[in-house]
Image 1 (cartoon, rainbow, N blue to C red):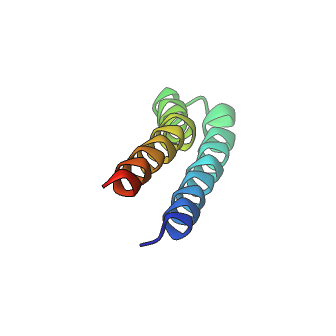
Image 2: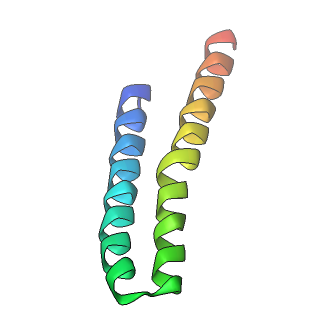
Amino acid sequence: MTSSAARRAITIVALCNLAYFFDEGAVALPIGSASLLADSADFFEDATVRYRLCIFEQSVILSFTRVA
């Protein structure tokens, strides 16, 4: 998988997680479900923190493969 294809796949997954965050949060707030709200927060974490980590890992892997 090329770097741009991997980055595109990571971005699509992050956007899906962000959409799930909003969907689940929109359901959790009106019904007052703490567990759905916590799960929504986990989707937000997946969309932000893990996205940045994956992009960072991609850049590190690319820098090592260019050196080798």
